[in-house]
Image (cartoon, rainbow, N blue to C red; front, top):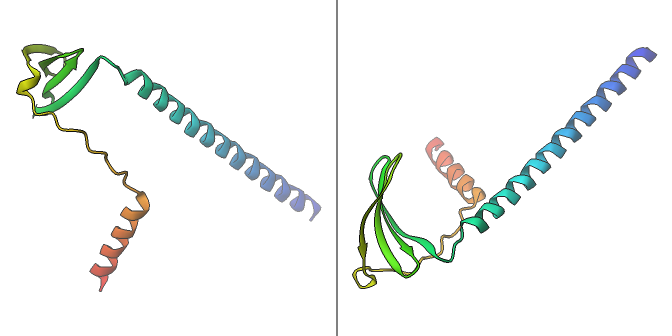
Length: 122
């Protein structure tokens, strides 16, 4: 009887320890991922080179208008190559201000899915 109480306490202690270690690793992973994302975001933001527009031609081929300094270029971006096509003037471009993208909340998507599934059941 005493042996079973001691082993169940050990099992509970081991479970709590494993759970704590799991949560600690999960937290470390979360904060490391956020830190790396912010670091890369700062490195990507450049004052001299900007992608103005991208047009998809096929699955892995794109045309891009880029701004380097005060000049604008059209390039072709493929799977393994980037090819310079031409330089264009700013007057030839129709540059529209970027509209802010509203973040999508998972809770809203889940509520919509619940509504759809309850409607189908009725």
